[in-house]
Amino acid sequence: MASYVHDKPKLQARLRRIEGQVRGLQKMIDEEKYCVDVLTQVSSVMAALQKVGMIIREDHIQGCVRGAIRDGTDGDRAVTELIDVVERFVKASPVGR
Image (cartoon, rainbow, N blue to C red):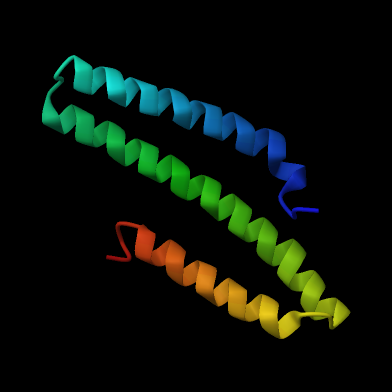
């Protein structure tokens, strides 16, 4: 079971909102809106996706990683995997570039 199950409704709501923002961006491009306005909306979408990632990452640490360490099953693998996913997340963020 995914560790974010208890946040699933909140995540789905956020993703629906992001989907709407992306549709809004498509419309802005279709209507040739001002560049700065489009970039502002792009930034908002990116921030919203980052927040979704933060929620899932926190749930993963609190659930999957903590459980693997506590149970002694795959603690080392879970920590290595966590480091890898954090590195990927940082590289994907505007701050990580």
